[in-house]
Amino acid sequence: MADTGVGPHSRVSQCPPNEYQCGGTELCIHMSKLCNGVPDCTDGWDEGPHCRVFANCTLSACQDSCAVTQSGPVCYCKSGYQIDQFGTKCKDFDECSVYGTCSQSCTNTEGSYACSCVEGYLLQPDNRSCKAKNGRMSRCNSWQAPLL
Image: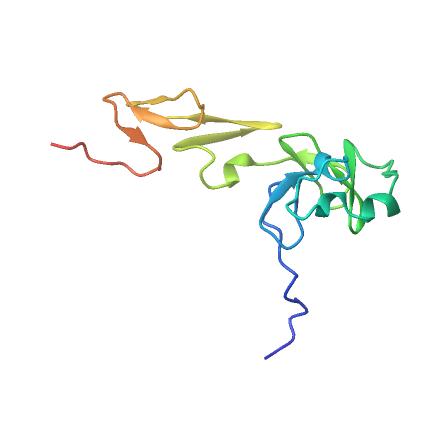
């Protein structure tokens, strides 16, 4: 078997932008919760010794905010934005690229998004799902024939 360089504790984070994966778990917490004095990860990982080692988050190049992680300070952005490839500036995050953001139509906007429904459906109060005008709920993009 070829060595991939990925150990048993290494995994690609599946967290949304501006969130950090708690060590050894699938739990994601917002970057602002790292080293804030309140343990949010089940093992207290987010309040570990790295908080003292990197006590000052002094990345002055951060466009928005800075958080202390186990590997040192990192920049993060306000909601609706993500860090660019250089790790300091914020760029729009395309929420519509995430499956399930909207049940039918999704339009990405700067720093946000808007859901809409096809003809015959109404946008629900959650501003994400659509309901047929005859009362049937739609949670997917496929058309469903009415029950007879």
